[in-house]
Each structure stands twice: as structure tokens, then as C-alpha cells.
Image 1 (cartoon, helix red, strand yellow):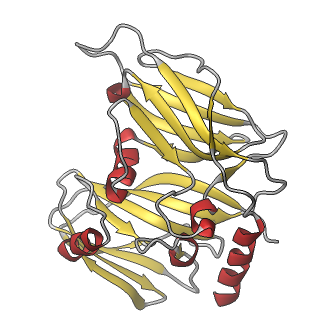
Image 2: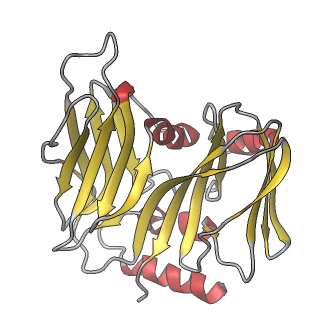
Image 3: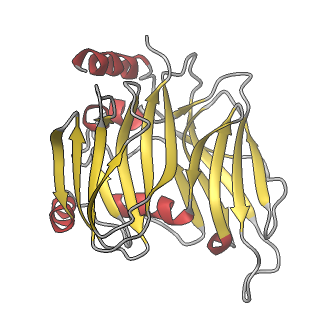
Length: 285
């Protein structure tokens, strides 16, 4: 594990070119409308630090996703994007949503930049925004714009940022163990945002190879975040592995010899939606 972490630190250092994000407007979306899935072809070459979506119908956005050469690497709801910002106490507006690749709240340039989206010539990257049906009081026509913070092109991608959700069944109240099936020496979790309909998640324990790694009660979690000028987003149980501001050092490795289990205590039965903010190693220097 230590050698892998050292390698990742070296890879992060390898891409630390001049960091001077600039704002650029993205091309218009195609297929914008209620009940439709709008699409935008992302220009490749620049390094994307974040992408902002601005619309007069944010309340009708069901899901935002991105694909790289046909494979989805971003899949998130507006509520989940807002939770990421709310936990970090980042300023928000009702008509804007931001996909954060780089994290400007962290302390080191390596941590800030590790999740930036490096794009390479010849790739196909698409941004999709899915809208629900029109409701009473909605504007007749949807406006949908996007802009980005970018930095210079890079010759190679070492890390791929991912925002992915999955549902963990929790068929009874109390503590149940959920096996993490995507464990890998190349997959690291920065943050998790767990939510349930009843909003009744009270405790998390993480066990790797039958040894406890983390124990966190909901009230202790809120206290810890508050001491670091962060907060618990409404309706979520956040697990911030990089809460101290060191993104490259603090991220949670998912590798295990035999098992990685998330033992969650919930007062009632019901599914748990889990958003993971992941950095995946896709190349080694």
C-alpha cells in the first residue's frame, strides 16, 4: 500500500504545471426540452477544473452525466451536487450546478489538481442533462448554458475523476454489513454521501480484511465537520476522508486482500443511496 501511495504522489507531482484556471463558455446543448436528454460535446485538449451548468429549470433536472469514449464516469443528481458544495460550505445559487473536478478548498496543489479532468486529442467526451416533464409554474422554454474553468493541455492522464452512485439494500433496521464490490488498488474514495428516504442513518463502521478502520456516529461526524468549518448537508450522511484538506494524502484506498465492508446502522429498513467521489488511477509514471 505504501509503495502504491508513493507512486500516486509522484504521479500527482508529474502533472503540476502552472495552475491558472481561466473561464471559457462551452458550446450550446443539443436536444434541450422537458422530458428530454440534452447533450453537449466537450472540446478535448484543455484540462477541466470544473464545469458549471446554468438553467432556468434546475428544479426539473433529473440527472447529469458524462461519458468518456462511451463509458460513463459521472452520474449525479442536482441534490447530490448541492450536497458536495453544502458539506464544504461552497457558495451556491439555485439556477446553477457545478461538477467539481478540482477541489479549490484543499490545502495543497497536488490535492487540488488530482481530480482535474485531463482530456486528450481524439477522445469523445459528452455531457448530458436529463429533464423531467414540465410542471405547473415552470417556464415555457428551457435555457441551458455551460461554462468551465480550464487550464492548459497535458500530454498524459494519470487520474480519472468519477462521481458515481449506487444503491445498497438495507432490508432491516439496525446494523447491516455492505460489501464493497469495486475494491481495487487503483480506486480511491475522497468523499461519500449516503442518503435514505427516512434520513435515519446513525453510524458507520468500515472494516478491511476483518479489521476495523473507521467508526463514526452521526452526531460525532457533525461535530468533526463543524470544527473544520464544514457541515452535514440536509438529508445526507457525509463521509469526508479528506476533511483535513489533504486530498492526495487523505483519500481512502479501496484495495483489500479479502474484504472491504461498510457496516451501516439504520433505524428502519430501506435502501441507501451512496454517492462516491472517486479518483481512479489510469496510468502510472
